Length: 288
Figure 1 (spheres, helix red, strand yellow):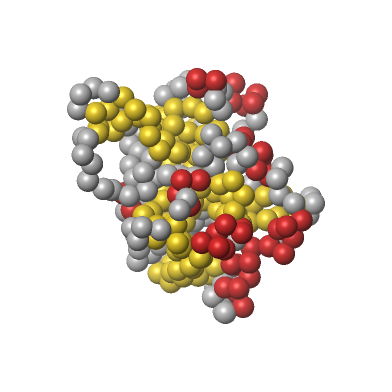
Figure 2 (cartoon, one colour):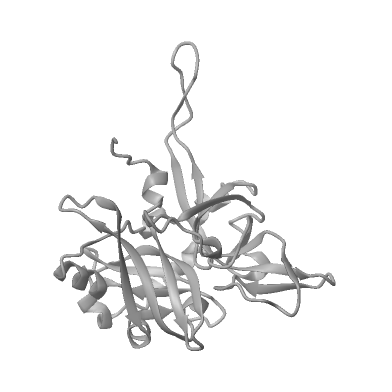
């Protein structure tokens, strides 16, 4: 099969399933995506971006990677689970400084180095801040943009090939506006347990060709921007009461019946810059 370097194929390798054991012994899951924080203009610090509530009060977390070959290509079907204990997670995680912002960065430089030493090199594709649209770019977007989310809703994934699930939706509020005065916006998409931490992209395909007659190229190149990170959504009780809740990390029986209304709350990607400003010499040993 020919190599596929398309954007969708690459997006299949930007996330990891985060499977956790809580302090109560429950198995929970969430989504994280790889992000490369700049350091000194020459190197970068690789991290997994997710929600604070995904990593809160857990004993350990397992991250699932695809092994890479000697040519830095993924070996589909060879999955490497990497465990991190609670003390490691606490040591290598930087939470967003605002307690109301459900955003965390788990730095994995040491994990990547150790895997390479054990002849298990890890394949991943990291995003960088260049993919985050500027304020001016956001203002030029429509209030109604198509979006995609990449993650593991209700824990579903292709565990044989270590592949995530793609979901599609639209923006429900303009991504340039701060919804309710917070650096957030809403999306109209199905948001289920396990989707916590999913990256939300604006994506438009590139060049297209006419199917019949002379070949005609329409449109420009592909467009991809990281708009934000999913973290919560409103649910309605059968009595009609609407509550805003974090996208849960597990499915459990509830004494109160709640109905998701397919609206997601998304933290704007620009808030990643506020985490980047906190990176200091404590992470020197994890920079690759």
